[in-house]
Image (cartoon, rainbow, N blue to C red):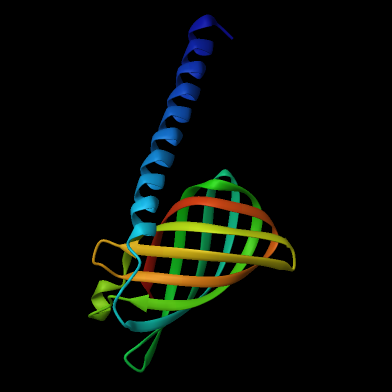
Length: 160
């Protein structure tokens, strides 16, 4: 290995760390804004999700569930990337949807703040999500696995 390749690797590593720090600061800033904007309107729907999360400083999640809105049930897909946490867990959660005026406002990117823990088959978690159309989702769930989560995540939700 020559000096140029070592220098390139160091530069890439530093750039990656800087990018992760910038992403985490951006997500945390959005998360703190989200935490201050709790819904004051009546619920417009219900949601249930099942999700797998893996985290080691950065985190990723994948799952699905059901949105109940105006007497109909719609299957949904969920995926996300974020920062904060260590471990792996499975999350089963139900919650309330606020600010959903039409079904087309539901799909898209959501900012998420989360807290929770899992140890074996015991665990809890609370999640708040908000998209740019004013839809807010409050989830409470149970985790199973081995994970400590405290951070922010960008979540993409789609109707199937």
